[in-house]
Image 1 (tube, one colour):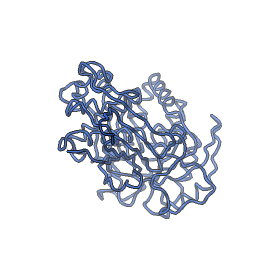
Image 2 (cartoon, helix red, strand yellow):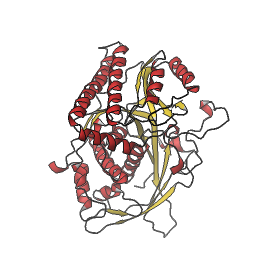
Image 3 (cartoon, helix red, strand yellow):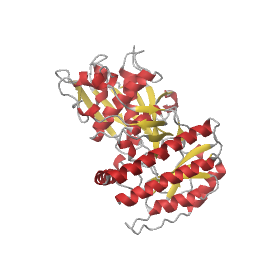
Image 4 (cartoon, one colour):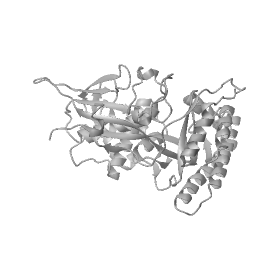
Length: 443
């Protein structure tokens, strides 16, 4: 059966509670998917009669010169698929199930506009109906300013899913099947860690696959014995890891979708802050502080875990009618922020720096705002707010932020710049197959 054009998308994420704690399996993280998605459209690559290609061409039309060609070959000794320029795990896995001979393919990747900050323009903003669905940023990809919505994990998940949907035999893989979705999760985690050059916590890939969830990380040892693509028997090891065919390859990740909810009448709002943070450096410093001060750190983390779990429980209670008081959420968020600021002070890491405290406090004073935090690892990149789902609240926030003037942080001299509300909100659903016809204009 000839291969057809197909499309897959995966959501972004916001880390509402559990930053830093998620690195340790003793703790969990409250992660929400966002309705900003990364889209991957895959189709056979046309060739001239008599011409045989062994390559996949990847393009990102929203950015200048964003085109990559990957050649591939079957590695000897069961080493899977050897890829020039990039270690791609997906084809190595496909080769253990289907034919190791692949038809050439073209993948076009599109990002919903809120993944990147648009260049400043003096022109008045366009009406929503006039805006491009996929904005042309007119810069190389490496010059684009990310807004911190988890683009790399969403990208890896969308492309991994597109390749599986495209190349695996019909009927052997479906994104609506929970077992197949687990295979995708495991494979995307392995591919993402390889691309990052380290074994991370995996919360961003989990939310890209499953959407909003309560997440407990996997043991890093699962991936440490996998080896590199092209090494002897890599394909066999990868297949066992993806399909969890032995006790040693069974993932101990916990992903609980039923524990998470955004009640009707409440929504998430993301605010992009024109100032950046070096997240890896911050993480290293916090972990070093914890290692040097285990008693103080573990007590603080245990209390934070309790408040994080309480926030998830209260959201669920409101969703299911057991609680109606939003003040309980405000109180819980306040306790989380207080402990985050204490961790900032003790570790000398700007997780919730004074400039962000000032911003969050001002937003929290707007009628209809339930509370907010600096998401994930913290710093100066963004804030996330829980608000009543009322356009009047959003309008008041826009009015506040339009004339926002940041307060200079005397400890490091940082003053945050422009603050803008992103056009995203919570998304419960994870990766999914899309109707390919909606992309006809772009493709």
